[in-house]
Amino acid sequence: GESVGLHLPTLSVQEGDNSIINCAYSNSASDYFIWYKQESGKGPQFIIDIRSNMDKRQGQRVTVLLNKTVKHLSLQIAATQPGDSAVYFCAEKGGNTDKLIFGTGTRLQVFP
Amino acid sequence: EPEVTQTPSHQVTQMGQEVILRCVPISNHLYFYWYRQILGQKVEFLVSFYNNEISEKSEIFDDQFSVERPDGSNFTLKIRSTKLEDSAMYFCASRKDRGSYEQYFGPGTRLTVT
Image (cartoon, rainbow over all chains, first blue to last red; front, side, top):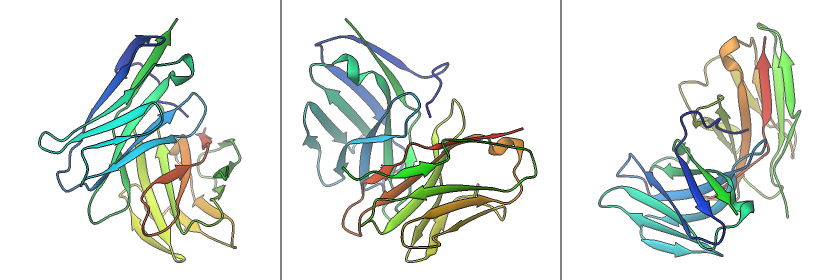
């Protein structure tokens, strides 16, 4: 499954460069945020998450930054590789629910 | 690494027919979900399920939809009388326990209603 990218924001980066994918969320009461990667024909794959009591969290080659003041979330991918090419979704969870609300998605294209 | 699995990968059905989409969540997970993604649109929440009952459902999840955990491993989504607008990718997800929020998704079932 994929979001066909006719209206999908696209980020094109050169292999080896760092990528930054941004996301604005809607609910100031959201207490948890998560980034997913979706490759063509596959389901969303967990990348990294962050709770609202943090503003930064690092994983392997990925960093998530949370700015609650402006309700903004970003995913940084270091040394982007061709295998990183996919659609990336942010999702938020409200404080009194466990459903995830997904953003529109950003298509990341990595060229050599 | 444990994964959520879904069957079938693609289901074609005629309008008005019943379909059952099947999921096997990760074995030690306690919370289960269905989401859908219409082509070109966002992933949308349908329903969450815990302790053998629905804990939350969206406006999309009307009387035509139902979920069931018939045994200790399967989690199903039934659409009683499919409509053209039910055509979408349907994703099952599971979450381990109360203390963890990350949801792990299956590969999806593409439902095509003709």
